[in-house]
Every structure is written in structure tokens, then in C-alpha cells.
Length: 305
Ligand SMILES: Cc1cc2nc3c(=O)[nH]c(=O)nc-3n(C[C@H](O)[C@H](O)[C@H](O)COP(=O)(O)OP(=O)(O)OC[C@H]3O[C@@H](n4cnc5c(N)ncnc54)[C@H](O)[C@@H]3O)c2cc1C
Image 1 (tube, rainbow, N blue to C red):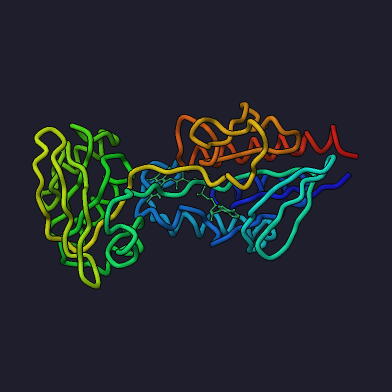
Image 2 (image 1 turned 135 degrees about the horizontal axis):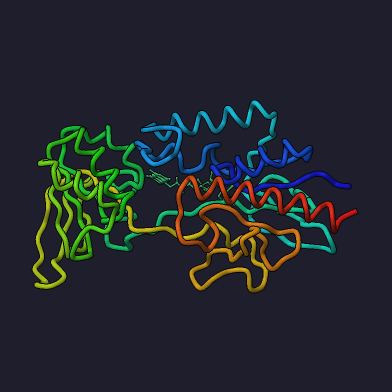
């Protein structure tokens, strides 16, 4: 029996799938396009992963990678751009190499959605960012804004308030929709100014960002905030368009699975944020990864000689 299982993505779901497969005597190979740990290093602080009362995202990423190394799991650095299936074998086309396997777990996470407003593209990396923990330090002491009112946005606004005296939270809705504990905290921090019912219109600057034009949705009143950094947290989309099999996506492009993480394609499984699900968090990603590995193993045992 071919005991190889290819896992696309080295975030929490891919890492967990690899550990479960390896411990069951299989040979998982993780293919990662960027760096091990997935989105974990982007989180300033994680307060809701059991076992840690509070841990930096980068420290949790290191623990996950330690588990990977402890289990001697191979990582191949490449980006999968296409998957096809010939009889029982999946052919995975990477940027550098082509891979084949009888079982594939897609654990490729999500990408951040863009605002699609004037100046966003021009100033991306020059004041516009999707990672407060990576770029916040560059704007220490300067006014900043976070776009979004979800838990991720609020968590990052709290972090930024430790670096500067003014953090605007630009929230489209009439109230913040993050976890209650975060909303309470945000409202208690004097440096954070929440602007509900407000949308960003235009980012302006010279070499780097100098201002953000906003609009109040109800009154249509426009105003300009002088600031130097804008962190965007307005949702995400699945990184799975490379697996273009018929009927595997929901209407938003997330991979549909059953509770065993099976897709409608035999031998193809999905785990973590890239799949259609209710809650995209680390605990649910690791849970999906474990289930996907067991399902892939059972599939290989039953179906492939
Ligand atoms: C700022 C921020 C704060 C967060 N805070 C929390 C929190 O406090 N608590 C919590 O539980 N969750 C938090 N999350 C969410 C959590 O990080 C994710 O739910 C989790 O990382 C999902 O794991 P995953 O393995 O499904 O995907 P990811 O972590 O996104 O990993 C997917 C991996 O796949 C790789 N990949 C993508 N496409 C390809 C390809 N074509 N070929 C090869 N590799 C590919 C990516 O490079 C990435 O490494 C936060 C996320 C962010 C961004």
C-alpha cells in the first residue's frame, strides 16, 4: 500500500493532520508555500487556545513546529497551483516540482480580503497592512486605524494601543461584533476611538500613508483622519482555487466537506479555515486536521492497493 499522504499547507490544520498520519505509520509530506505555522505568527496574542492562558502567536507557532520536528515530518517548500486526478492518483503541480499521491489533504487556509478602495494597492506595505504584529512597530507613537469590528480586528487594535495614543476602529456596522470580552476591553481603552457606522473611502499619502478619508453611512458625511498606518481586517476568502474539481466549493469558494472532512472527490480531504464551516479558529483547525488524517488513512486502507 502507498503510505504517502500529501498535505497542502503548514498551518495548525496541516500540522495536526501530519502528526496524526505520521503516528499512524504513514508518510505525510507537507507542502508549504511560505512559512510553517500558517497564520499563527500573525496573531499578537492568543487567549482562547486551551492549555495557554495567553500566548504570543509566534510562540504558539514555534510549539506547533516543534511537534512537527519531533515527529520527523518533512516539509517541501513549494506552492501548489493545480491538482488533477488520474485514476486513483492525484497529480499536484507546484511552482517548482510536480508531486503525486493517492490521498491529499487541502489545509491551505484563507487570504485576507481587500478594501478595494483608492490608495490601498498603492500604499500596501507603505502604511497599509494586514498584520499589526508584523508592522505596528514601524508606526510607534503615530496615529493608526484598524478597519473592521470583528474579534480579530479588536484584538489587533488592543495591541496597537500599546504602541500609540490614537487608534481609530473604523466599523461598518452600528456596533462592534467581536467577542463581548474584547468589546468591553476596547471601550475601556482611552487611546481607542471607535467609529461605528463608518466606511473607509480613500487612502492618501506621499511616499507612505498620511490620511484616510471616511464616510458616515447614515449621514453620508465625509471626513479625513490624519494617520500613518491602516490595518485591514474585513474578512477572508479560501485559498483553494487550485483544487478546481467540480462541485467541491460552496458559493463563497470554501471547500465543502462532510464531518469526516471528505470532499465529493474520493481521496481528497479538506481541513481548517479553507473549508466551509461555522467557526475559523485554531481549535477547529486542529480538530479538522486530526479527522482529515484519520479519514485519509481509512481511505488508503480500503481503496488503494
Ligand atoms: C491576526 C490574526 C489573529 C488571530 N487570532 C486568533 C486567536 O486569537 N484565536 C484563534 O483561535 N484563532 C486566531 N486566528 C485565526 C487562526 O490563526 C486560524 O483559524 C488558523 O491559523 C487556521 O489554520 P489553518 O491551518 O486552517 O490555516 P492557516 O493557518 O492559514 O495555514 C494555511 C497554510 O497554507 C499555506 N498555503 C496556502 N496556499 C498554499 C498553496 N497553494 N500551496 C502551499 N501552501 C499553501 C499558507 O502559506 C499557510 O501557511 C487569528 C488569525 C489572524 C490572522
